[in-house]
Length: 149
Image (cartoon, rainbow, N blue to C red; front, side):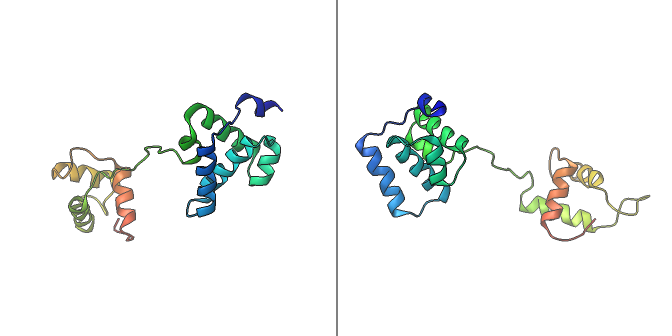
């Protein structure tokens, strides 16, 4: 019973009703509902292997749900963590338009075409941005769905 004993799930009646209402109503992600079912079955004393088979998940998932419930509470155990990995774009719409205009213009003298590094340097020289990487230029141009360079 190794992993079962370390993180015991004990729910009060309000928590059981809350989890059951989540499952009954639906409207949540499948993963959220699975985690709710895992907690209910763990509270009922089911073994991790049986819970994993019932929920269609691995043993480690059952273990992690139990652990998060014990360490962080019911909300943390059920709902996905906000990882904070939002992607922030350096270029707004106006700056993107300037980048595209530069990319569509004549290449600098001595060059056949614009390179990502040259475009990045030109945006800095035009004071569109303080600094920008060639990778940011690449992803911005890729977003436009055109082969400008």
